[in-house]
Image (cartoon, rainbow, N blue to C red; front, top):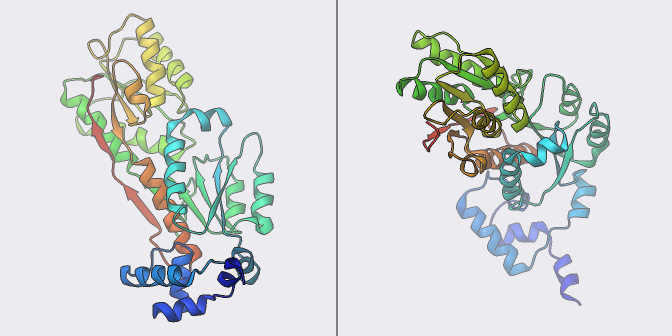
Length: 337
């Protein structure tokens, strides 16, 4: 008998007996669920090693109607997806968590498509669940997907319901704290370059900026939408300068937009931070690649990706994770303020 044949004869029941646990506990370990005690996890892993047990994915899929595949759906164009370090951090976190499970990741960039192809693929039974990141109010196809498989959202859903599961950062608090930092540094005319208001992150960061100004008795400064892109940030900065006067400071709702704004300020002969102070949001690699290096609000994007994947795996294992997980942001002070 070959080694492969010998491994094939080992059943999940034999692993459970050797580990002294239930069959369902072994199944949870194999599928990467976190709902297992450290002691049981160690016992199962030891039994798997001793018995040379190799899960038969094809057989399990036929028996359980599971594919052990997860869809990551990003309703953005490819330029935005590959050009924004936020997505790289999110995918890295998701992949790190799935790497400790038996699931594989399928990526769908829903560009120039109302979601019909993506929806058809998901509803065909090709994946067991989905993670949705960076969705807009116009992305109605997400609702059709959520009717078919469990979905975990990266960020507050555009139409939040009690049954939804999502992992977000405290965008409102982060924007509030960034704006307060500028106020405490003596700035009073503070503009903002916001994200699109079709996205909850754009709405929440604008709300945090406004709340901080109101709490200090200050009026809103210039507000321009930069679409969470470098080109959009540059265009928004031009509109702010054309409107005049030049603001004391600017809260920019993403590092990419801040990079665009910096190029426009430099071309206009304005110095940062001497003439205009800037705070970004993300603490992506962009923040340290520009000059001056950006003061920014750090959001834990890698951890967000990990947490989303963990929640989806728990749902697929029949567990009951929390519906809402909010991660904190942190101010990172550098040279732009």
